[in-house]
Length: 76
Image (cartoon, rainbow, N blue to C red; front, top):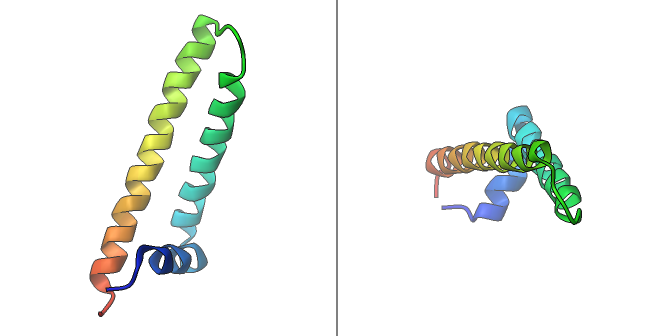
C-alpha cells in the first residue's frame, strides 16, 4: 500500500477536485489566522470563524475520503 504522501502527490497532480479542496482548505486556514489576530471579534466575525471552521473541516473530510479511495484502488 502506498504511503499517504505519495497518494496525496498523485491526487494533486491528477485530480482537479482534490487540488481545489486543498486550495480551499488553505484559504480557510489563512482567513482564520487573520481573524485570530484581532483582539475583539464582532458577532459577525465570530459567526465567520465558526463558518470557516466548518468549511475547513468539510474540505479536510472530503480530501481524506479521496485519499482512502485512492489508497484502496492502488495495488500494493
